[in-house]
Image (cartoon, rainbow, N blue to C red; front, side):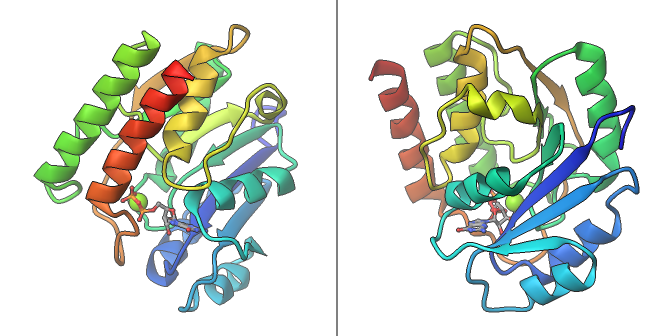
Length: 223
Ligand SMILES: Nc1nc2c(ncn2[C@@H]2O[C@H](COP(=O)(O)OP(=O)(O)O)[C@@H](O)[C@H]2O)c(=O)[nH]1
Ligand SMILES: [Mg+2]
């Protein structure tokens, strides 16, 4: 519990046996529930997560968005915090994010990776791709968003009944933010975090996912 709120952490994982160990060992004691959604990993991700006390859900259908939707359905906390299983997002920053979330009194808080302070954390190509996608989100939805592709969010679980989440893939990350921004009853905030280099191999295909995410934003805006 954190200030009377039940806290759930959700982590989607595809072959992250090294990263998930580092993430789980730093999860603060006030977190009530840690859910790892494993998608047919061929390494020991599920075993490692289970041995470290996480609730492990095996989702058969592939996809980042699919994994999150499954995790959301299992979550019981008042507040949900998400992050990658690759140890690139700051686990030690969870209390900082929760404090900001409560202080700003928002329904959805996005943790922005920008400015990137660790030069090894993000390649130049990824920085440009993220810049284009965040600029597109900001222009299309008329709200400044510095990192529409961040995978670390803090939000009230109750907002899930108000928003529509359809993407099964990487576009899920921008979709949930756009849904929070567009909804007239929901408030959106963003603060900067320290982002670092990941353990293991990226699951992102920069060209395919980058173009898909851009088309997803355009379709979402004009449909
Ligand atoms: N369960 C599940 N997790 C996934 C899938 N694709 C990616 N992930 C996880 O989602 C997180 C984000 O993927 P990552 O490769 O780090 O993308 P990046 O942070 O955008 O470079 C990582 O923890 C991945 O292991 C998937 O299909 N299923
Ligand atoms: Mg990652």
